[in-house]
Image 1 (cartoon, helix red, strand yellow):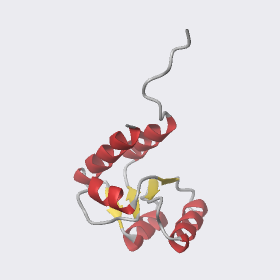
Image 2 (cartoon, rainbow, N blue to C red):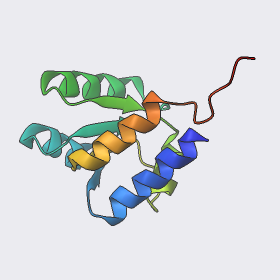
Image 3 (spheres, rainbow, N blue to C red):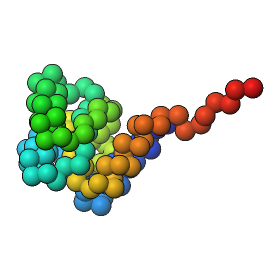
Image 4 (cartoon, helix red, strand yellow):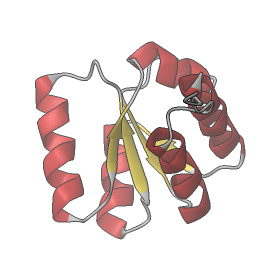
Length: 110
């Protein structure tokens, strides 16, 4: 359920022009300080994973792994996407919140 909400918010960020995708675009956004959050597909290659983990940790950019290449791509209306950069602090916070509270419905103990 939360994944659907996350993916639809990604689409929203894309339509608002606040996303970059692909290695080069995301690297540039990380280096320039524009990237507020980087989202990587869970099925990214080890090489890609290491590259972005290192780059994000060096520049102190939060990195999330969520969804497959196909899910990330389709959520923004594109082909497969392995890596996305969020360029807006508001969208970055909103997407991170989605992950922090995975349970929308809290169980009530009787």
